[in-house]
Length: 175
Image 1 (tube, rainbow, N blue to C red):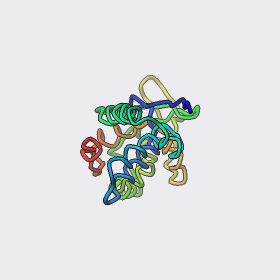
Image 2: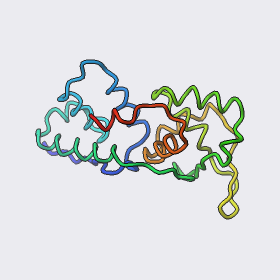
Image 3: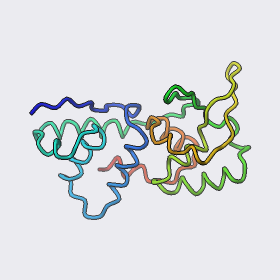
Image 4: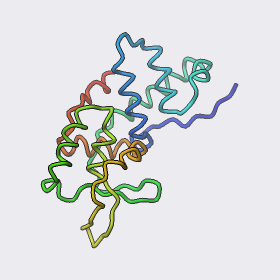
């Protein structure tokens, strides 16, 4: 059986949702390397686990190496990104966030299951742009789920570049 896969080779080709699923997998105790490799292909190549199990061992190894290389890229902070036809902008004045935004950032950046919620505080749809300056929409906690589709390089760049994230990024590099 032939299967055509799209293998992400850069962080920008991986979504935050895929990364969160991978991080949740890594948190499991007694995780066997063979099972992890299968799940990496399932998660990042968006293919059913039954199909993965029928793939040649060599192909699984190549795919997991390419994904690992992408995950280990050093991200940078992006002020803007486009998602589903909407331009999102990084909060222009992080030092002027509201108390509620601060509480949400502090709460959500400490749990990798809630990264999309933290990034919803940091990135919001751009309302107006004048030169390099822009305004963003008011914070709406109910809009967080869309952030699961954001590119991983943007998410990690914001979380690490802002100095707010408390997650263990070294764990992903060592697997």
